[in-house]
Length: 308
Image (cartoon, rainbow, N blue to C red; front, side):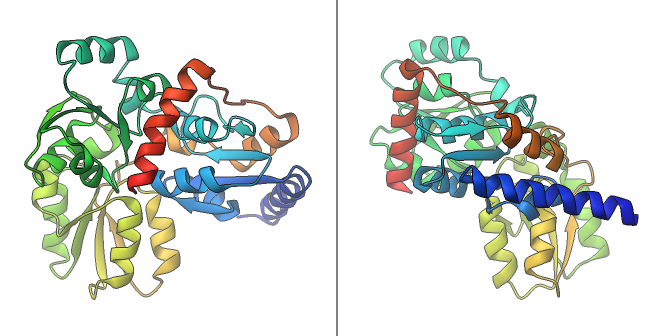
């Protein structure tokens, strides 16, 4: 990186810090964000951790560096605060696979069954749900539901993983995360052949075939804990490549290998320092949820947080 580029980056960070202070703002970043975004954030975490942090914040402004459904959760929990998404185009293909009209039709076919929705859904869909879950607590949430059968959406892979560990019957929506879907069991086997001593940890959004070759199936926060605690010095990481930045920061003596170089979420990479600064300067891309959606959607999130 050239000297002028370094100076420009430093100036950007200084400007963001000044505005963060003057506006009483907090910057939240998901583990999949660009390295520079993670480094400037007040808190970096997975969906559950960020939901908790958003619920507890005393900041006037929340700059949410993630994708839209994550910023929506912050707005659901903080209707009196300003929630900004630096890039309004940062969406989620998995979320888009469950349009609310189709979810309502699906519910109407089995109106007796409770709906458990992954947080990777729109606020509209959360409002149609009985309770939400994240990858970190999906099994715990499903087990908390009293009914023997549940409607689970939108991620079929996460649902299939939960179904392996519960006696409840899960009716699965046919959605998936394109980024995790791109990781293959063959890629992991090739890496294991080259690094037989390596441990393999994968995200439950991966396909069942990938989960079958893993040593541990974990949310991103679980992966961070596993990396710290395992005796393995080489770890194959089956999730979006953005997590490797934090893994390497926290475990400099260990080697981390992406399970697939194609496991990149382009939406997660849309937020940049320039866009964070612009959002803070101009108060743009504010997330506002209508009350008739916010109240029932918040109820589903609150139930999850109570269990978690």
